[in-house]
Length: 250
Image 1 (cartoon, rainbow, N blue to C red):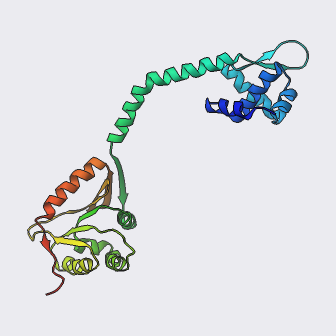
Image 2: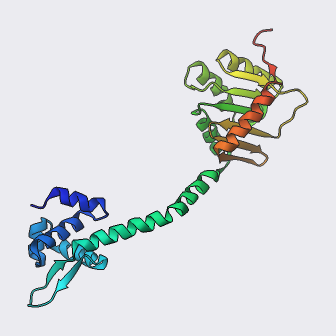
Image 3: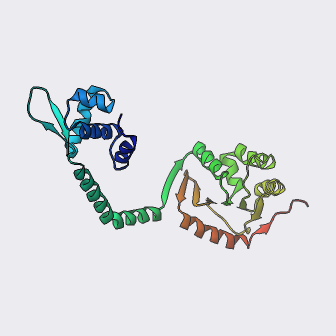
């Protein structure tokens, strides 16, 4: 039986398990036929040929001449060590480039685009999973697109099926005010935009993303960027200070 510690060591430096077993078996045998290698490595004979072909490509095994039966032997273990050191040196040399690629990838926002009512409802429901949520919206306008969903929000708030505690900055219309009263009673923070303020799109700032909803045509763009979301949240909070509180009683 082959030493499992040796097998694990070779796997740690990039050998597949069967490659490690065949190479170690070759070292122990000195030279051997496919049958001998298969018996020693405890793998099927048919697989041995495939594994040895790959080891030969890597320079870790070779054919042994002489006789009618084909035999194989392992290359010097120092060659494995040399190749591993070379690979480590190459990686060390490329590390600054790899880190630059990583930083560039982190800085680049990821943008998603969704069209249609069903996609819109789906995106808004993902907002419900956020921990830090802000909406700048018109309930009157949303009610034309997804009236059942708008009414269901209040029900889910009241039944604690929506765990977010969001800030809702909404337009000052009868529809919005009626919705706001139920939202406030359900524990949501709601303020009304000044009467003179008109917004043609809806905005949602949820954790590290910002969603922008267009109604004509109907689509949503979701930007995944911590920096953009953080900056938008700061602007939202400044505007929030100018909003009007919602009266739940007359």
